[in-house]
Image 1 (spheres, rainbow, N blue to C red):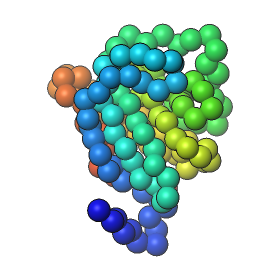
Image 2 (image 1 turned 90 degrees about the vertical axis):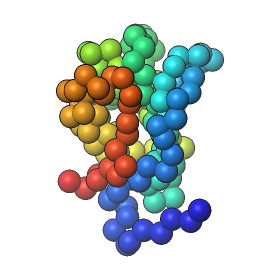
Image 3 (image 1 turned 30 degrees about the vertical axis):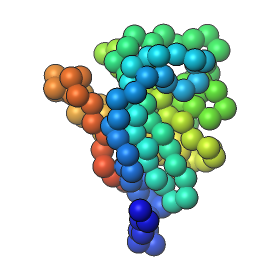
Image 4 (image 1 turned 45 degrees about the vertical axis):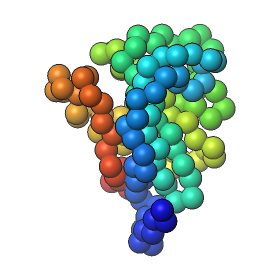
Length: 135
């Protein structure tokens, strides 16, 4: 399948796959943590997102990021994590780091926080189909 976007596509990340129920979040070694996975396309980049309701602690080696709206931690060279106080987490995995990855991460958390206000959100996760990173 080939997707084509307008010239302004760099302001949108599009959900290509997901949510898919799977096991294992990136960046913390081999694990079988249950999660939902989604894959976004932003220009020529693919960004993988993992959502879990497991109680995942913030490990001492994780560094808190500055310059982002929400409290993200750098888990490894290409993985960010957002841990919500209501015991859900987002792991964001990417190949190439630039400001657009942080914009996608911030906008994704913003959307997830909006939907997390409903109890139904925690029963079946969903990812937004389009993330507008130039708001």
